[in-house]
Image (tube, rainbow, N blue to C red; front, top):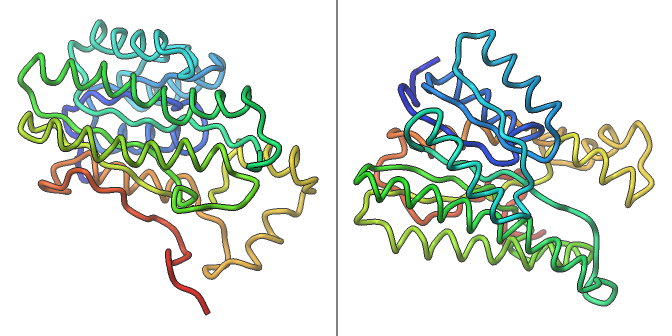
Length: 260
């Protein structure tokens, strides 16, 4: 532990599993004074809170679906009620259900916008309002995706939402730079999470060996791990990242724009 987040109160939306849970653990390890996780399923959230509590970290689970703007506001309100403030926000919830330009229904499109764009918007709105209202600096990191650059044909609504999120990050960062609220994004690549396992099995008929088969095709010989992203998130949340704001960092083993 290097104490990158000493004394900070950190809210992680989509924080009960996958990359979000890894971010919550990393924040606790780096000295956060409080860690709040929110997600649709209460059970893994409570399990994670118990784990962090066993390490001496004050933690709270707030059930809620980021697709609901009120749930986003409630998560921030619960954090402020418990800890008095929000210093850092991570938006890590994601929906990756497949759809192409030709077969995506309005319902699927709206679901992607709700989780991958609208949820982060209203989480940022509430958290930044707390920071600005207190006249205090703060940091936000949104998990974007390398797919925001274009993505695969089966990711059409996902790409639309994540590309919108990248634009939101830049807009919000510019709007609040003089409030000393730094807002950045991390565009991650193919990552081995519980959600990705479910997606591979549901949409691509993957078997138990899908990770090994995928790893054989990847430059580094493995999929990214949630903790890989979490290390970068903690860095961006911390003072170690200096004055950087409005950046959406590519965080993957493929090089955007390069080809053989």
